[in-house]
Length: 228
Ligand code: ADP
Image (cartoon, helix red, strand yellow):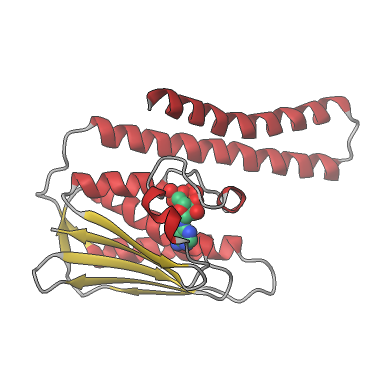
């Protein structure tokens, strides 16, 4: 497992690195106009950001593995966390929208005053991964709804529902594996590291909760977090 993981990480880093080296060579060897140079620098920036995202996610994962279980004494205020996550999602949606495309409809439903015992940073990471994935994989104009509910047995549930492409059932059991992607190029184009759902699964295990994934091709997806 460790060998596979190292091979995967090396591959993930090598791809943007190769692209970037190519651009550096171009800049060094061709007499470019300022406009062309800016174009190449922009493309290099995209690759550098990709490596940065990857390293950030790897660090989050290694912290989750290394640290002791989160204190459950922290009461995290969900409405305020959700409002931060909502603005991040709107920013991401605006950044990925092409000119002339309709906006995503993003709706957040959270009962006033709802609090959850757990580690704020980890919970933020898990929830924003789900909401951001919904934005990244749902085409322009689609709808994303994140709803918090208190279940009849007093457990707390977050459901993130999107009207995106959905996921074929054979992929569902593997989605939380590190670097498992249904569509590699779509994941990369939208800035994916392939580690998001692995992080979500880890955070949920550490909080004694579970991640549930329901999806149907062409009908969108529903990712739920259930906390004890
Ligand atoms: P990535 O960085 O590639 O998005 P994740 O671990 O977050 O990695 O997700 C793993 C894969 O699950 C994605 O590559 C994508 O194929 C699929 N996926 C995740 N969320 C959604 C969604 N809301 N709609 C469709 N596919 C999704």
